[in-house]
Length: 334
Image (tube, rainbow, N blue to C red; front, side, top):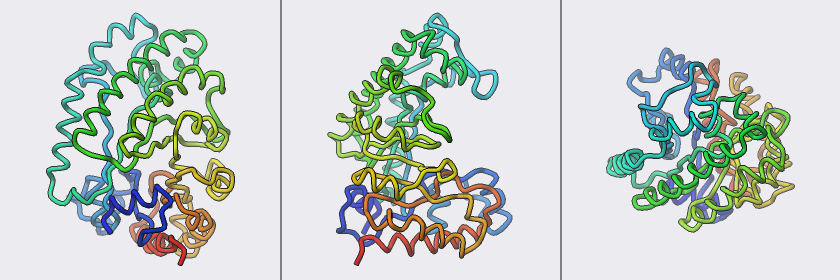
């Protein structure tokens, strides 16, 4: 069964498949792959897809589309602002959401599909979301104040973002039919949401409700990528037409079995506690046993709950992959 078909069936809770996809959705930390290169990973392997192939994982290709021209000003420090008010946003608007960026997206996709061997790859893409993108413009601190101090600017940014996403969607589906997509948000932290339900309803929900049906009409599952303790937000996302979540971070208290009990039709990707991967086979197997009820329930693709951290040796990782394939083969239950 080719990777794209296996993905579509798994995301649809089908039992008509050989096993669950065995994938690495998140790019490894550079420090991790640097360590592996001293342990036998060929030095010329730098691209995510190439390392996945070397490790024997299923084919899964990711697109993240650029929203700012390279000419756009950048923050002075990580998490800092590019602009602070509507006048500043007006000044940089010529660098945002351009036709040239749509052309770049088209060419990036075309280049991939013309690559030999790409035809059987599962594909997913990310759209920067309506919490995520304004933060990249206003900076982390100013963004949170802007919900109160500059609501008109927040809505203007998100209106512009949604309009561009509509154009991007038209470009994407001229060429490919991805199995799933994510809205990049990171709007939760280890204790829950970083905004109130009222703020979510005003500034974010309408745009999910606008875009999700369009994407779903193309045959693509709609997921959210948000870190932290996401469980309280699941009903919020469902209101917007979102069908699933990743990465489901265990260190934040997320429990994929509890989610499956409470939300039987929610798609899940991730959920495996990355902090046990360096502890050896017994600890890795125990973690797979912990999440095995969710695995056999369907609609769940197990995987690392974020990037594999430094300190996980290549031997550790190969042990993880051996067990990943073993537990992916437990679905469908026979």
